[in-house]
Image (tube, rainbow, N blue to C red; front, top):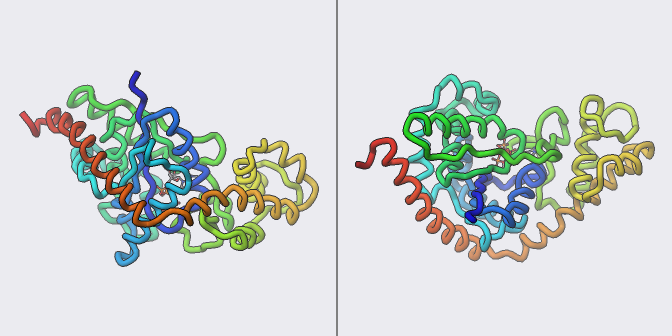
Amino acid sequence: MKRKTVFSGLQPTGNIHVGNYLGALRNWVRLQDEYDCIYCIVDLHAMTVEYDTSDFAKERGEAARVLIACGVDPKRSLYYYQSEVPHHVELAWILGTITGTGQLSRMTQFKEKSGTTGANLGLFAYPVLMAADILLYRADAVPVGDDQRQHLELARDLAERFNFRFGEEFPIPEPIIPEHGARIMSLQDPKVKMSKSDPDPGSRILVLDDPDTIRARIKAAVTDSGSDVRFDWEQKPGISNLIEMMSLFTGRPLESIEGEYGTGGYGKFKEAVAESVIEGLAPIRAAFAALDDGDVEQIVRAGALEAHEKAEVFQQRVRERVGLRG
Ligand code: AQP
């Protein structure tokens, strides 16, 4: 029986953080056993905000290496750079013709990011390109963090709209969003999500951070009033964020952590959180160090060739449906 297809992407910046890892990448790795997985470094998406052209290729390569270190296995998954397969952009254009500008202007991420970097057409159209990424390979499921829920909803709408207007072509993709870890919060402001583009490096832990940096970040993490260690997003968002991280890195239930550290004060608890994060990330740091940049480039280039072939077959059907081929 044909396995279902999973697609997901990650923007290449040097700042891949534990939110990306716990919210999305861990699921990417797990799903490789069950699905045909296609994972993409979405470099075209990363160009929608200001970036440094001289560092871009290096950062893209580093992101590719981090993902392999996290467990993306190129023997089991198709893995490549988005810009190497032009079909993403072609399909985005076609989907753009059935996308309402009203719906795009309601996208939370557009509103947030256009406030800081200024609105540009790329940022506005970002969710359409994301829909094209997913629909290009007829993905059945998309592992993402909670912040991508709204964009995925648009991809589902566009699949339905296309199927209705031009004939049944796309499956309606299902989100795969973990129950815990889907929204890891900033260490400096637990009301906003941990983010690559937050100007304050103290707001996040990177998957490649060394142990001393991790200890310092967690020690300085904003906590809540009181001193009890309790999982309660309303009253104690800072502490709940740390409990959740510790639970995900150790596999321990939330209650067991509350039980052990509940009344012992924040200091001892934070030390334990730091050690669990350090231990959880150690295999990734080791795997990253053992990888060679040249080998990684070869892997993604070979992936792009295979992805290109696959995309061409699928895209030909879209061209026929919309009347671009006889
Ligand atoms: N804080 C988070 N908690 C859980 N999951 C998260 N993701 C992002 N932030 C968190 C998930 O990570 C995957 C890759 O994200 P992306 O590269 O597409 O970037 P993003 O979603 O825009 O978020 P970032 O990484 O923080 O970047 P910026 O600063 O540009 O917003 C996605 O599946 C995402 O849901």
